[in-house]
Length: 279
Image (cartoon, rainbow, N blue to C red):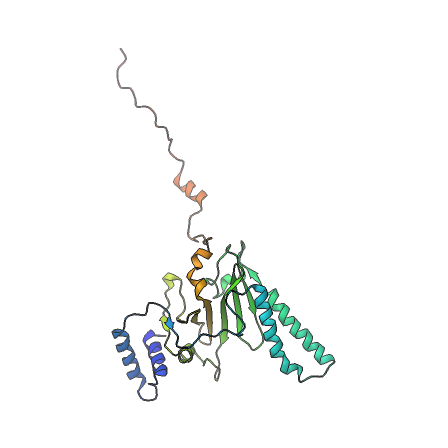
């Protein structure tokens, strides 16, 4: 997707231009505005606060506290189901299903320790680091977006929602529609970050921030997106919170490097030859 067209779409909806001008005119106006304005050096600042779901979730919560918040959310979502059944077999089935969802969330914990994990082969790679007291919990439910809760030193600092797009859905049918809807929701067009494989960025990202939270809308192909919510305070200190850095995959093993280099020269050079003839 071309950045100019995406930016034009954001401007059109945010400033109410779509109904009065053609897409070509909107794109031209967007190019003119982009040329006249200084480049955005950081995330767009929202005019409306960024909300987390559920509202009881707060940055810095422990794993236990997040588990309790999810328990309460599930209890609320199951209430309408309980109202439809009478005590008996059906209610016991609901009890078992609710308990299994709560336990499944806790069992989903994956720690990023010494051993690599299966998530390394997913788009989530790069959202965590190893050997820095990090782990993840995942809430995966039928017909609901999958939500990943990231912790560092047992403090919640990031949530990523994996969302399938669909006609009539709250975020539209494609990435551009999702970008427009979030720009409208936050009251301003987001900053567009195009892919850059040289830096390890393989998807288009649009981001915003408010006083406490940074949001990234991430392209996940033609029919899916991800929305990442991050704690600003943790994000600013993430380098110091990750003292253990990953090894460079293309680095040469020290033993191999020594073999290639060959034996070290004798540190004690021989004395200079005596060229004087013996008498």
